Length: 325
Image (cartoon, rainbow, N blue to C red; front, side):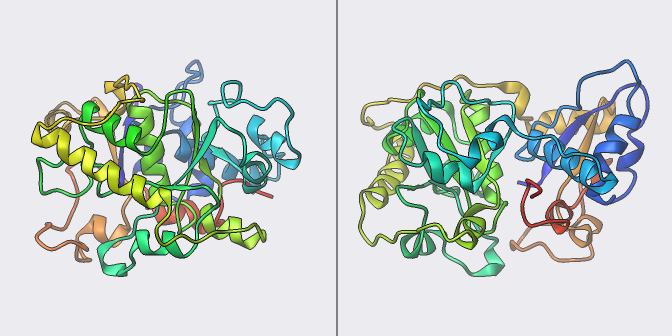
């Protein structure tokens, strides 16, 4: 979950020479590229534009200039008449809790609880979902909606498997999706990226996740045997049926795979030699340096040769949430 590829341009990305404070990241990104280049580096990973977006806001916040407002965030203060996710901007990766609260009951908007925790945390996301979740939210099982042909955890499933699982959740291509998690911002970015990989652009991460939602006093609901639980089970069963070669139910979600948003192991290996892209490791610095044990048994410590460290924890250290108040 914690890596990315940054495109190089003529010179080395000096800001990646060490684990830098994320409040300086946006400035250093731009200072590392030629003045004539207008595009941002490509980050084909769960952090993708989320990382660049946060770095930009952090930079503006630090130097005291006005933080650029989000077209979606502008809508957060009041309900929007004739709302449709078809017209909502896909240029911003996050929406505020206020915006979601105002538009929660819109028919073409679905909310996904994508909570997931590291093995050593000993937390059960499905159980926590049943205790408290945003009203009408569906549960997206990060470990369940995954490739069943490998023992590696939550590897990207095939197009057919993803389409079958998402269809079992009742999601269609016309739906707008808001995804959140129980930490504030963690596994939600992974699911945001998964949908993007399979061609669905109308998806946003909830700024601050469930903690922010609850801190603002918005209602949560519980469910021990709701329709959402049955759908989560059906999604897992659909994935298994695809990999077993069995028939699946009606498919209501059509995928459009975006190969530029994900790399294979062979591509990573080739890049170690060719050095045409900069690999970024978003794990903690001790894990990157190999001085802290990996949370999963049997996984070697250390990092991919040539990669640079930008700890994901530093992204949130400045503020628990993406959008500055």
